Length: 252
Image 1: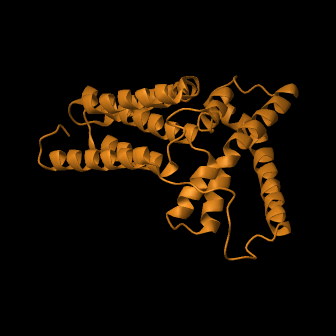
Image 2: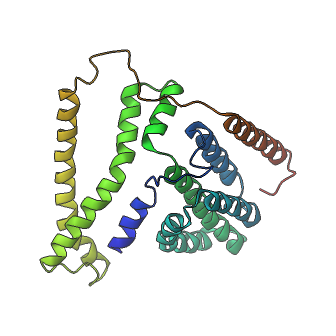
């Protein structure tokens, strides 16, 4: 279970590769993520959600991140089963169809967001946010949070290994006992990450962060023709599907 949690964190870690998806502008990939997420949330029938999921898998193949993507998807199997059971029990009518649809929603959204984070570096994403007018302070906070995801995974694994070497058995006992056993892991993890945040703050102060209002950057990102074409097609697709959905020409 602990390895599953760590794999989930690493499943959203950027992998640098030379593919057509990696070379896309982060704003174009953000539009893809937003459009696919909106379309996914519009439907409550399995077939459209399955089509969106298969389309995302094609993007995964183009990005050559099948192994990393598969690791992430494997980690949400238990959560998917839980959502399926809960929705099956709670749905008033058409229980099976509704439960499958809600489960497909989770799987599809996870796939879409995993693609974005696996193929978009934090540096490019921060520059994209700045181009969109987001203040640099907020951009820095967000991108540093993304950067610390793999760091958090490594710290968590290190603490788990240390506690296991001291005889802590995480996999034994009932649910309540397992939760109690995670306290010796969560407490040092929280304390260590707080210390790390102070170190980062001191490093920023040592580099005179915020002293100059006008900033310069090592490189600039620009929307290429392919980015504009992809973004335009995605927006047109979203507009068309919303129109068909509102006119009851698509299954909801």
